[in-house]
Length: 261
Image (cartoon, rainbow, N blue to C red; front, side):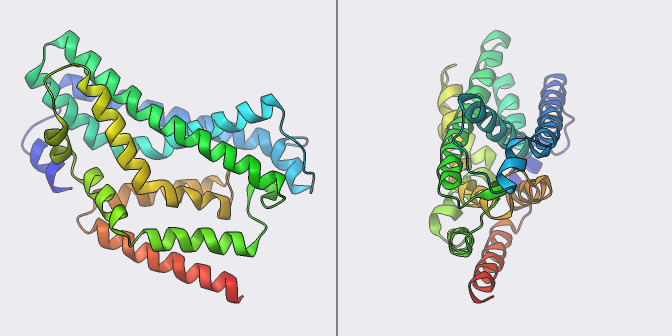
């Protein structure tokens, strides 16, 4: 990403930026540790994944629903925090130059809270969709059992990688400095508005890729890591847009292979 590099070139991270970086990396690591623990518990005898793999279609209890919702929230944090680090570091740098300490700390907290809230909303939608697919016997073992459903999700994701809406959302995520300058307002509540806007662009960029988890396995942590790494690369590399479109072609080919195979 040219903009983040240009913004920080020749400058060391400030103490506040280092603290923010440490907190975000620690939160990311904690999210992945929680995912590992949840995946182990769900696949244990009697767990949700074990029951589903055994062909048992059971209505979710409130505890089941809360567990799956928590899993999606933690998963979204673990997947998305690394790719939003440049945005948060540059925003913190802008705040340091334009606001006094108490106000800028609050603005940064509001930005992070609003961004997280957007992904919590996405996690809620994903949980409801997972419940519906499981009740229709289309998602045993948290993985699609329907060739048509799997091919359809792959095709949607592949086509979306080529659409202008994907390119527009990706451009906002790839250009943190341009985004911040466009949305900047000299008040603390601007952090909340900017966090919501950035979260919306991130969801717009990544929702179709997240849908692939229903194809490869909702709690398949290998694929969760692969998708997270790809999201980081398409937002970071200079040719990220073309990497995104190449991925779209591969997904379309995978979809056709499922249909014809």
